[in-house]
Image (cartoon, rainbow, N blue to C red):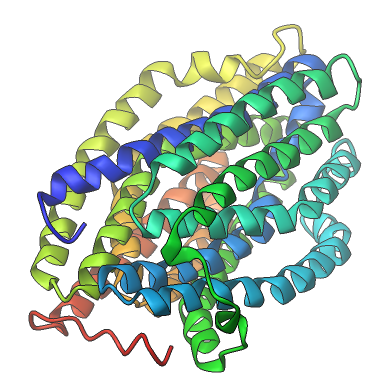
Length: 450
């Protein structure tokens, strides 16, 4: 990505990422659709309520792997291949201990957190059982994110797309089998998800093993404290940022639960579509981050600035297009998840659509947030994005606790948008401050000493 048209390169990278994310969201949505249709509104509400708790734990390995990938992209852009191999080896060593610790903590804290969130009696046991299975798949999630992250860092977004396509097929087939004929209930959806992730991880691993620059030698596995510190310096703020954002989401989910089962079911049904709504911006942000990392490693700051401008322009147009689609098709899509014979189907559907309409209005800022955050991370600055997580936390919690007293349920809908606006403004200002510190050349520290 260090030569050629930035628009062509960014879009060429982003389109396979977008397709992969679409497939991932597809099997998440089909999981919800099968559960909602076969098991009813209560089961759908239980699985949907797991969203923020799912993200709170699984986003930690995602964040760490993203930090590893930032360093890998900088090494690759600067042609520091020996350092790239050591980066891979030290990433694997770090991840083993971190995954074990996270697995233990997540299983121990799950029940107390569900109680703290005021989970309804109708759903709490179903949600707990579902998440225990998802958390058991943490080692698979860590492997998947590390392998796909390294492939993205080297500019390969097609293999992760293939992996997700295969995983989607496996997940959809197993969802129907486990929830339907085998009668495993909501647990069946969790089992299908973990197995599908394992398939995806195996495909990405096979691709990584074929790349000489990502095949460490025995000496690369010798613990290197300097390299480990650098990887943690990059990865930990991203993981912590995700955890902070999740905390705000958990508080918001507690507020949602307090409005009763019907409101919870409608709000959470719309939340299951949120990932689908976000993916265009997230994919473009991913591409912008890789573009920035490689060009920063190569010392081409003019291309970094040009790439950022083009990415911001593209994401704004995308946000407007996606928002229009939401307004036109939101209600028909939501209705697919809710059994028409349910007594509360009409109320649940209207609540979900109201939330989607508010979400559509905030998409331009959300998409810009993705691009500017990824650009900062590509520059090696993961602290400012982490601090933006605190801004997002404050905005989400403050809005969720205060506005419902004035606006009722509409105050809950606005909490998500307020979080995007606060964090987005903070990131945009921080990104331009960071760029102003560079006067034409990158300041990447030596890769040879970690």
